[in-house]
Image (cartoon, rainbow, N blue to C red; front, top):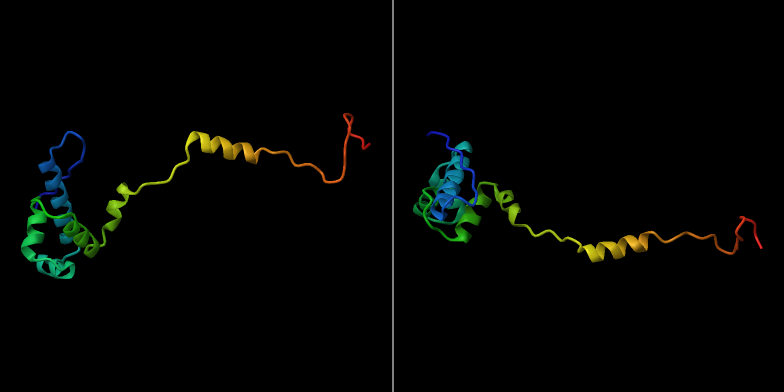
Length: 116
């Protein structure tokens, strides 16, 4: 097997991306020295469905998730994680609250620093 690296970008067609995903699945499975039948059984899919996925054919998202889980590669989906971010306005409000002065309780100071 020749090791072909795919860089997924906007210029690739959908078919090319599906083939890159299939190549990743096949490569990962082979690196783990696992047979198609064993991975398919663990993922509760047919071996032919796994073969379709590895060839870059269209399969369901559920099938891809099952296979990634079995191969311990679910972390590849972290790119889809939505991270909460503060809006600039909310950030400014938080920073304003943090900048409040700390005053000594019960002591009033005049302009030259002495107590009244």
